[in-house]
Image (cartoon, rainbow, N blue to C red; front, side, top):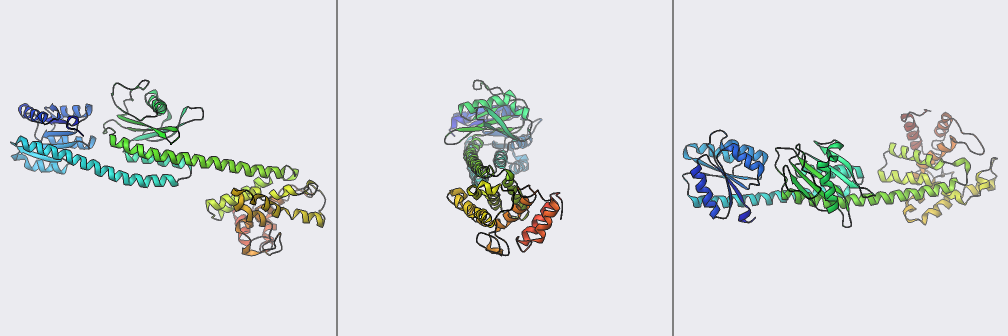
Length: 485
């Protein structure tokens, strides 16, 4: 900071002392404003950017100590030097405890004042550097948390919450750019949670300007002039930051942060910190959006495969979707991880994909299948595994699709494996698939009542099905409010 930009406020009810100090400090290159009382000084501080206050302790009305308390509450970044006579030395020491950077005893030497002013500004610079360092350390931890968050709503909430805390704002809002180029509110936190507040033209005009210009905007109460199209901020806000959320390729939205009246204004350091955090968060948001787009396309591809199979068999329409629902309920109940749940979910959709290679005449036959026809049906797990093994993002589902008709006692197909050798996901699929098949209409029989299907599952524990998984399935179906055994 150059001397010319350093603004000192001299506060003393003795006009002659204030004038002597002012003349001396102006010669040193500082910008000087004077006030003869604490109340007058506060008015100047609220309306002007002040870097240092030199205040007498003993003044009529508001004392210098009272003034110091208000400054440290409302504008803690302002350095304060106290002046005092010898009889009030104890008061000077009290002032130091309250946050004054130093004090001068009257009568004082002007050169001593010059040194203490210089030291006060050095102290401020050191404080800013320490604050910046602590915030950068916090920023590093915050960006790590944001980069590991995969749920979009959770990411938005964490980002806005971190921003509010980092700069001690009283509230904030996130706006995102829609596909048609409009700015849409997504989340509000803090004091102002009403949609109408953030969409009021006095706030929203700032967001629109930032979205269009792709430049940050900091507005103070009563500030003039303002950029074209931007309205003054409302009286319930003292200071506002509106910042573009930019990725390397585009602007995805706008962040708003605001402070209540009586709070210190947002500083250039606040803006710098939020700018860094927003840059990192914008990339995280864009990455999560990309992940969800890929995820959606992935799911659409899997559903298309499942529908291709069900199109051949009029009796199994919706079978794969229902099996998927059962596998997800069961997998969650058994405490599987999110990744494992996702795998069994998609395996549930694709478990019968191999039937696409089976004759429709066999699939839709109303009479009992011959041994030869049943042998054809038994090929579908291997056919399905072969089909999806050539699709990179489906390879992890191969073991579940291949072995979902294995029996726990080893009498199933295609490989006749048993017990724990059967992949766990395949054992979940086996129970879910059997229950859905039993409770649905088939060309050769009508659907069984649920009570009957539950009893068959129970009776087949340790034979066709893994006992642990059957117990879990029956338990969760009862807890879900379904008909019990």
